[in-house]
Picture 1 (cartoon, one colour):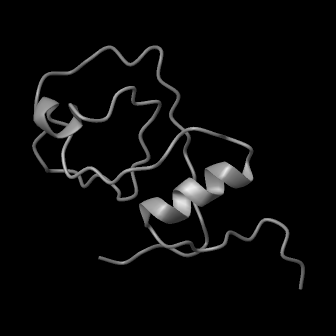
Picture 2 (tube, helix red, strand yellow):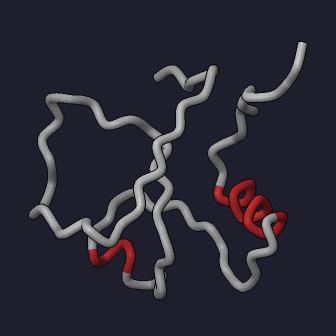
Length: 86
């Protein structure tokens, strides 16, 4: 059986993502875990180059905060054959 198109399940750990970036040739950045997107939470992390959302938004949950312009944001939609179950 070919592994082509099969996704590998990886641990959702900042260190794993930092090592992945280094493997891609990215230098001088580090992945950090955030528990909110509040100004207080993100104040010490400047600049922020991107966000990786690891868990699916669930319909029915109320949005927090005001909508912002996302016209200059790239959203990668990825689906693997294995998903985390919560």
